Length: 116
Image 1 (cartoon, rainbow, N blue to C red):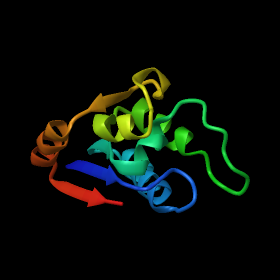
Image 2: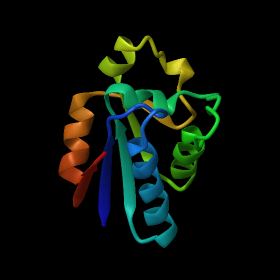
Image 3: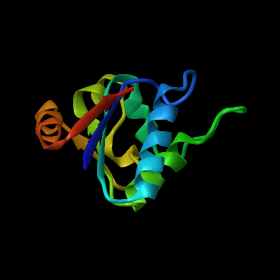
Image 4: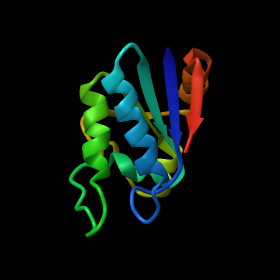
């Protein structure tokens, strides 16, 4: 089964992106599926390399890197990156600048789309 996760929230302050990435990890551990992650709005900051985790929070970069190591593709909305002055060189290895057209292609590819 093919899953697309669309994350919208900042990496810290709320828990939606964290919970989405926890579910990604659980699905990948079970095996037998392909997972892609698309980061929109403040969630683009989930892909920032070298995060310093605030006290009392989990390291979002760790969860994202874990998904990438297990074969997940990670697309980061380019317009959202520009709005937050995040450049490609600041992205975690394996996360790629992407477009809304990429999101449309991935949506058509997916059997299930989950939005956090």
